[in-house]
Image 1 (cartoon, rainbow, N blue to C red):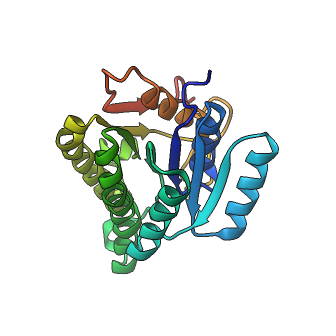
Image 2 (cartoon, rainbow, N blue to C red; image 1 turned 120 degrees about the horizontal axis):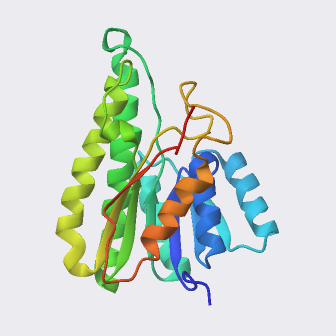
Length: 235
């Protein structure tokens, strides 16, 4: 039996990159995966690809900064499957500029997607997880949530905030058998940013997905609250 048989997972930012890899990895372990993203076209392609592998996946178009759309995403999932066992807050954006060149709109957009876009799915799914007395909430952060760098002030700020939010949440919900894990990838070979390093020697989206699977399939008595993922030898 696969370890996630019978589990239902929601993955935000699930149409491409790390989110797509996470959705596939969870489905390969037996979970039914609901992928959320803004682009219906990209979602459709990803879901079609996963289903062609015989995996249980569906897509629901949703903007994670919208209360109404996040509520619809969670309600639709619970109505169809009866529960949510895993939530992966993966949706995120980054604008990398010196502080003096960062516009208010760019700053606000990162906070809206990276933090509000994690807060809304989390708070919307929590009542169901409390009711079922269990679940896993995973935040895909970044090593930028632990380290500062030039041109990263706005992005780093949101990821440092995510670490604080997730850590406090973990302490609040563990009594309901809800585990909270924050994953901090370093350079990952994706199109997320022009700053990302490329090549087979760099961490791949599938490697981050493996960390998610590791966290949610750990024995129920244990919780891996933080996992750093970085290339072994990035040179």
